[in-house]
Length: 77
Image 1 (cartoon, rainbow, N blue to C red):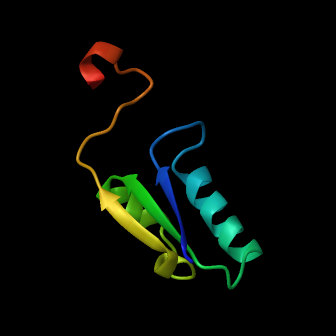
Image 2: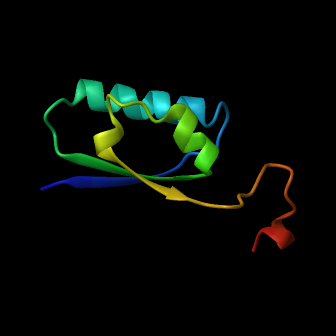
């Protein structure tokens, strides 16, 4: 059975680099385990951070906009 993990690549301190570093680390430490990551973010993120070594484990869902820490909660909905 394949485990599917959904991740917001745009959120958190150090994102998006730290998100993809974590994905790569997980895949490297769980070689052979069936895992798929659904990663949400902008097209630029995909081009810059998805490495060939783990691209087969990622389904990238492109988004045109995202909420930043400066975004007012009332405008994020």
